[in-house]
Image (cartoon, rainbow, N blue to C red; front, side):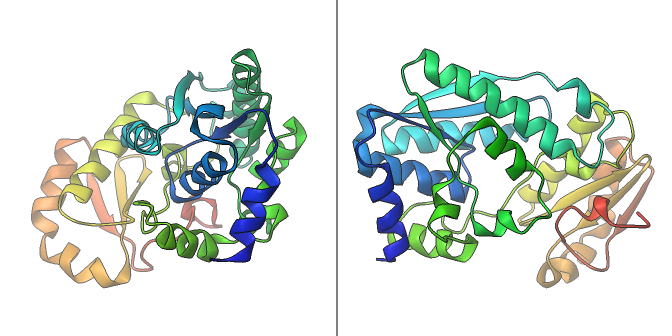
Length: 263
């Protein structure tokens, strides 16, 4: 077993109780498993923030995974912070700051004073302002402290037989929208429906970026040919959702492409 994993578990031992910011993704599932091993399931609390701009399936995944690991799990409702209603470039900072304030308060009220987050070494590259918010609120980041990156998270998760080890990374629905534009709940819903349709056809790591009446589909390069083979049916389905123009991004799936110049 990777000694960095053992170091994380050891760093959590001795705590009276631990709360884990839990999204149900590969990172937070591994951290929840570490906490469970370190202090026992009865002393671990998983906290999932439920926002208007998260993918609904993520809630179901988090509930199922927490139950699988046998730990207490609480959903914490969070409204959209006013600072991100126009989807600014620094939305992640404002979202995470408010989110971790709520989770920290909720955890303390329930008797779990120590909150930890599953940010890994890749999140510390300076381009992700969410980590600044995590640190300002005072949330622990044991993966970063012990040098665990995304590849290590997946490798350790596989060795532990965690079902999430191959789970694709996800991000909130705001990453599918243009920056500095008012966020519409109706728009978020149709983006989610469009992505759900494509996922139902077997496409993984798919994104539908919204440019008003235009939907820009991103899939992995290896799935592009299959996407084009079903172009007519997919186009018709997305038009039923209200998109007038449907395009395929020739560069495929890439992280937060809406943040790039010229979008």
